[in-house]
Amino acid sequence: MLFFGALVGAAVALVATLIPWLPDAASSQAGKIDALYWAVTVICIIIFALVAGVSVFAVWKFRAGPDDTEDGKPTHGNTMLEIVWTAVPTALVTAISIYSAVVLVQVGDAPAGTRVVNVMSQQFAWSFEYPDQKVTSGDLVLPVDRPVILHLTSKDVIHSFWVPQWRMKQDAVPGIQTRLVITPSKLGTFPVICTELCGLGHGLMRSQAVVMTQEDFDAWLSKQKQAAGGGGGGGGAADGKQLFLSQGCKDCHTLADAGSTAKVGPDLDAGLKGKDADFIKQSIVDPNAEITPGYQPNVMPQNFGQTLSQAQIDALVKYLQQATQGG
Ligand code: CUA
Image 1 (cartoon, rainbow, N blue to C red):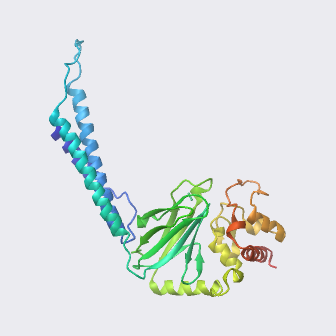
Image 2 (cartoon, rainbow, N blue to C red; image 1 turned 120 degrees about the vertical axis):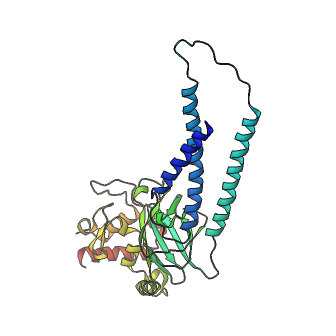
């Protein structure tokens, strides 16, 4: 009976592990995470198949015959069986805990001098700050094969940073800083997904991670640095287009000048025609004041008035006027 269950368990586990369930692994941490994931999954499959196999067998073997109205014989425990079903799970869970702790330490390891990128999350957008260059971007751009430390936090509620191909996932919590080490191992563009139910726009809270060669990354970073005004001017030198790209506006709105085609919120090329600066400013700091027909309130963050400086809001308003009305 036990043998039959074990056989079924081993066969199901073999078939399950041969199916490519996970997306391509694209970080050097992914291999360790996948090995742990599969070890735990195979243990679960074998135990499930064992229990289900024994149950099905027992239901069939000890079923009542057509004329059998007798009660089953009372049984009173089995010491050996009880020791086994206590000891085996205890040993398995302890082993999984130790293995997990070892992997957790290994994937959190970063050499001294590793680049730090600050990850800011808010309802419902990500932004990524490169503190050494004072550059902020709406996409997480990284060089391939270099470790990076992400410092994550949130402006409002709990979000969770996840790039499936990197396997690494971490909560972004207001008031504290969490940490994640990533070493991208493949060039390409990967989705950044929020995996914590954070409000109406949760399902739309996406960005992208772009992994480039070191040369392309250096060129990108210096270009961003120039666009941000060299970092010398702080908020006062804020460039409206740069803000539009880095503050998540482009992830929801269509704006030809910025090359964005998102359709989560109203199309700005059409919607801002003939609107004055006051209307644009109100739409940024108090988005619920006037809702475009066909759209829902509370989807756009309502705290840009607090998270952006006055100079940044003015720059954004000016840019949106120029971009949609040519003057
Ligand atoms: Cu942010 Cu879900």
